[in-house]
Image: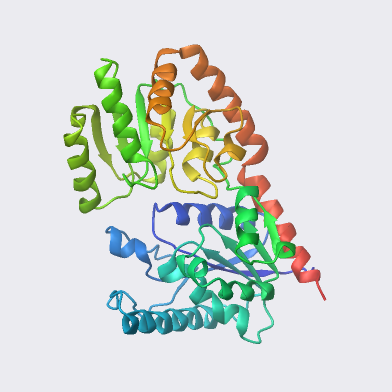
Length: 378
């Protein structure tokens, strides 16, 4: 591999969003390995969902055109217009990274970082090596599977779990291009002697994240007179919060939910270290959860579900229940809330597992090895 390497990192760059946290950690650790990283970003779905800001740092090249959110209809002409605008967005990204040796595209959402803006990188006759990390499968690539043939032109496609690798192969992404690289966690942060007092749910109160299964479990525990208080922290808008509150009121559990709102990255870590345990009852497939990996790094026990890559991450270092199973989720909450010894045992296991598998030091070195391999390809 050449002595000096420049990487263009195409990614969401909104402060305190999970994708930005992932990319910032990767960028920081790669730069410690003396790799020059240039961030290429734009407005994405984050801007339409909640008020936040792009990081104004000089190492972010911002693709401001075209602005796609005015074309949000679902009729054929709106979809066609959005497709071409997204394609132009990809061309704009590409133009800002032409001097890079490697372009690392973070595929994270349909709107600005999905498969359509990726197409110019894989179809244009450029000299850069293209590495793609698929954080979420794009709804476009699931509905139009023929599009997935373009990944044959990528030099490497990173996914976050073995489960995700199997799903990617079923979608038609070439298996020989796929590499499993776990989601990173803060490099084994120091755990302060902070009192653990809260039970937390970290994320938007959405169905796919299991929030509505959680409040059903709280309703069941209320009938048993054992319902705990759950603190909800995350990035969500008023509409999402109001919908969740109405459902909680219907089930009579609004008094058992404390709405904490959005957290900075520092506050996120503090809340994890102040949690008795956290609940992540996913019902839709996830590749690798930043909530799970960060909780593990902080020694915080986690209750989650057998969905996607979660069992690969938690293994025996957490409590795993079937998705959408209200009864078993309620039982797991009571079990952890009442058993301090079990919480300590799971927390210690989780922290050791995170240090071994998910540290950013390890993830960045494995990413650098991928860069070396693709640059050495003839």
